Image 1 (tube, rainbow over the protein chains, first blue to last red):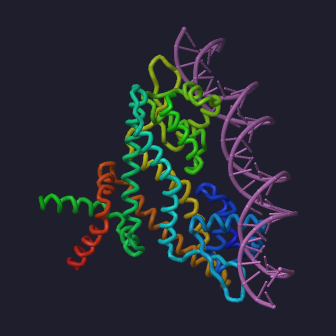
Image 2 (image 1 turned 45 degrees about the vertical axis):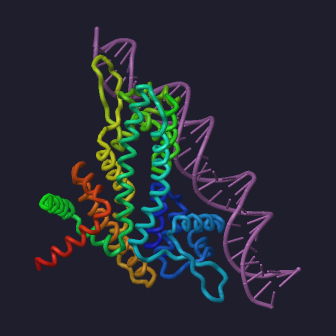
Length: 180
Length: 180
DNA sequence: CTCAATTTTCAGAAATTTCTGAAACTTCAT
DNA sequence: ATGAAGTTTCAGAAATTTCTGAAAATTGAG
């Protein structure tokens, strides 16, 4: 590994824990991401000096996150891994996966808590707060689902609009008002 | 704690680690969030059966995340904590804080890596990949900054539009084309 | 300033998570 | 079928993170 690659890989290792993946997994991804060709498990283990089994675990997790994909070369039985190229696709995958892991469970807990029949002052207040939270999350995820369905080009355009989002909103608002 | 509150608190404890805060911190926040009145550290320690010092640490972290705020009652020297009520405000704070912790460091690492003068095939490819990543993140955060500046009401409206985002986009597109 | 109430710090204990090496398993060419 | 190449599993070792109790620091009333 060159110093440039080493710095990148080690940064991903450090950030890994903040992103909910562990250090090893972060480094493996980083290495695959910058590699000019797909890598197999042994090459990864050697480059990062991890045990072969640790790499196996890490790759399994990256596959679960759908951040790497498998490739095969004819005449070689080993599995090779590469990181998908379309950056927006990666972004979308990440967002989707995080939503599934970090938001969905809470949403279902809230739903069932809100169905409970309670009577104490305290519980009624708690339910009101939970209802606020539920509404917010629901609204956010609905919007997110929608944005997620956009193709990379459109998404990129939406982002590119940046500073004009609120102007656009004002405009849409006036437009609607004129119609009524 | 009633069973309803207990369930909510314990869920936040379990999710805490997925959200980059620890179990204790998650539970403390949950308790404050549903509480009908501000709580002091001793009340929290008693309700959750944590050591007093653990609660102190947890509250400090929640303050760093700007998820709780301090209140004082006259004639009582203790500090009381409550969770801000405006859900969108909370959402915005959370997003901002996560951006600062999870994205900003990577962005600055990428910037400095891209300034390095390299010549090997391998490093040139790595830099190209890093450039992709940098562009994407930059674009995303610029957009996010912008959205973040919107007040709660506008943000809520934007989200509420949901399925119409892309229609709006098409519209803006045509509008622009007409002008040129 | 003094002192009691309260909060914070911190070293080490406890718990959790990550990592390893050895063994088990799978796959496929012969 | 056999066995060589490759992958996965898993029990326990290593590392990291969290939690505690005791002690230190801070705060504000008198």
